[in-house]
Image (cartoon, rainbow, N blue to C red; front, side):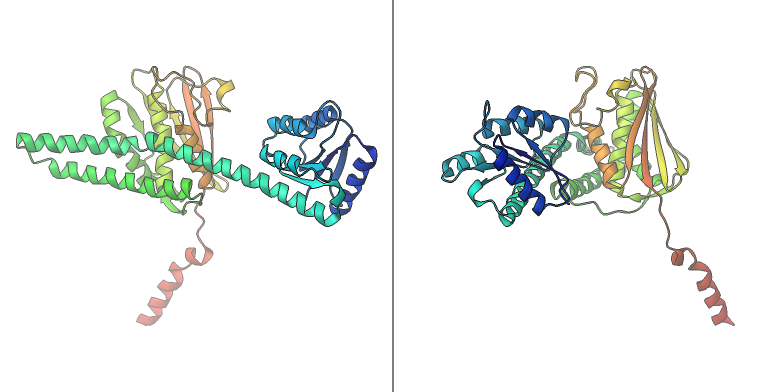
Length: 378
């Protein structure tokens, strides 16, 4: 990506202009800006983003390392290059230790050395951002193990206990049915592990295919039936749902999270969630409406952030990751998710997903095959 804006910070006019001219020759399309004092540089960086900042070390009121610390406090991944004098190897080592992206001795500034230094500095910051994002992914995965995996694990325990009780009482008629549910729960757990490993740990996009939402909603209902029965809750689903382009396991995760969210954050006598679908140009929209507690308007922008909780754990149990994972899973399927809500009345979560587009040849293939068969019979 071409550089848009560079900043040179140096109290020496001659050295500042020489550096700016060299940068202009190497990056002719970049906007080269100058700052004569560290305080001015700090203000400029607060007002606009820079692709890379060059700092002189010896400056009045604040040296280059101190300024770099302040700039990084507001822009963690800002590429910063420290300009040093000859013989400042110890200073350069200290700069790198403290997080400076790279350094360059002023006596060795050439077009080629500038290009290499800028490339290294940007690469270092890109890698740092990637490492931090991957670390966050691993942390989210660990939380997901405690959050999304609980439902099938709970089912496995429940049906195992039911089987044990029936064997003890000599009533074996329902065991086969319990074993079926047990196997289904284990299969869902296995699929979730596979997808989460691919999607979160390996940071690869999930495999997308045509997904029948009827099947997905049936799986969700089967998974949460014990909760519906125990809490007298109601889940209403469309008689006929469309086929979308996505990932079945991720789609199951998204809908189960949103449905359980609507049932859990609910003070109604009969907690209710209704799922409906509608078609818009180029996509399907799935609406998940509940009669729960609702969400204040000022919090709607934050509810998809990790570990954001609007209620205490004592009032409503949860980890604060359900909506985060739902949004991430929707985005992985080339979709999006947003929420509308009225406090005290409930919320509507909307999921936009691509429509399955059949190839022209596939759509027209049935009739030609029929004609061929008729010709063969003739």
